[in-house]
Length: 203
Image (tube, rainbow, N blue to C red; front, side, top):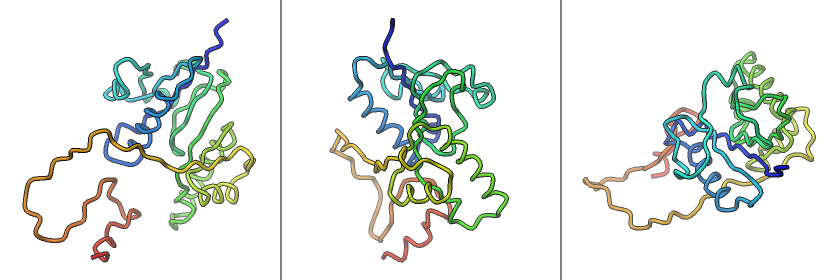
């Protein structure tokens, strides 16, 4: 009998390269590869153009948009780690896979969005926390939000802060060009909730 645990890390959001979710999935995937127990098979659920991002010898499951509607086509696994609270990708329930769900934020509770949209988000997250066997909150604030806003067993929530590995390459090249004036450098998705418009007040 094969007693190996088949673990799939959902890295579908790595389709967008320059944002926090890409970095989160990459760092987590690299750490899992480094710490992978001998009795587990780790695979990465990625868009086709990201196959190889965790090394050519790693196992990959290629994401397909139809998996949102036909989860039975997702390969069988014992553990599925949903890395984003808004994910639409899960294995079929008949697989009886354990679900680990990471919740980074519940901004819709605080942004004053229309009630209809807030209700839609609430329903989606409620389904996630109900199905999840373990929930990772990235801060105590997020854990508090989950407990207060949803019908959920608080015992299955663990707070694990975001981490980041020190890059091996330290000899970064200085950008070309003139930098005689004060400037602010940032990487990430540019939208109003990221409050970039207030960064200039720091200078």
